[in-house]
Amino acid sequence: ALLSLLPIASVALFLVALRWPASRAMPIAYIVCALLALFVWQIPVAVVSAATINGVVVAVTLIFIIFGAIALLNTLQESGGLYAIRAGFTGISADRRVQVIIIAWLFGAFIEGSAGFGTPAAVAVPLLAGLGFPAMAAVIAGMIIQSTPVSFGAAGTPILVGVSTGLSNDPAVAEMIATSGGLTFEALLDGIAVKVAVLHAIAGTFVPLIVVTLMTGLFGANRSFAEGLRAWKFALFAAFAMTLPYLLAAWFLGPEFPSLLGGLAGLAIVITAAKRGFLTPTDEWHFADKSTWKPSWSGTIEIRPDEIPDRNISMWLAWSPYLVVAVLLVVTRLDALPFKSWMQGLAVRI
Figure (cartoon, rainbow, N blue to C red):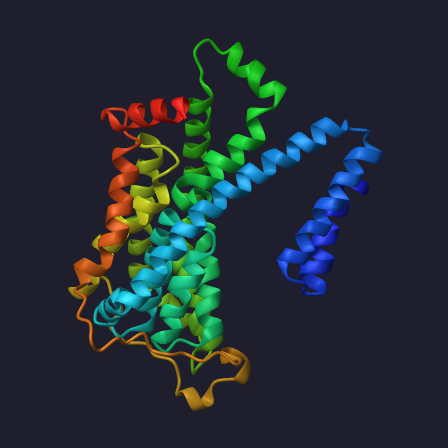
């Protein structure tokens, strides 16, 4: 048991304690793991080599998804679309509690569902900082909300790649499917996705309230958690606006869509409600003057506005790439439409 912890311990030592880059720390963890497999557990070289190749294939699959996510983000940045999205969020409400719920919780969940792999931190967190949030407050909010959408990030990659890879070669799982009388591996993954969604939805109901309470208690002028709790009605409303579509998507559509469609539906519902003042706090809450912030709240970060004066991108045009991604994911995965079977047949021929 202690030897099996060595690869994880090596990651903790080099990546966390010594702060080496992952490009140096992770190969060391791989070498430690491979040496343990070969010389401690006496696993054949062919098996270790096959597992290594399989890991490379999975990594390339993930990198391909990340490439698309980052390419889309940079395209929005250069076209002015990201600034249009930022301006649209700013105009919804001046209350920082409302802003953090909409941007971190809902927009972050949508970005996680459509792109994943840290892109919510690359998009939502700088967006909050650009709106005037302390950088540390933005990071804390962006990380806390990941607890709910992350299992269905990047169109369900943790389930479809992570869980699938872990279970597909397990003899006990194969035996269970073979003796179940009709259960398929895909149906098993769908069932796991539903159970995961139920657990996350229950916990996620309280995530927006936790975020605003920590924000007002740690970064407010009065350091008052009560100021965050005053937004409980709007926080719970925003939670259900995301988690209910999230559950329905997991139940009816599978693991690709809960975070993506939950975040998108929540954005439409909550933004409409916030513009009309529905359940929003009666008192606007703001951070103290920036001159009173602790140096550790901002560090050395420099916020540069994404304004591009020679381009006029509408809100719909700025959001259109993400909407196209959502539509393509849906139409290519519904059994009622011909695209899923056509793509599966194409993949087999390739």
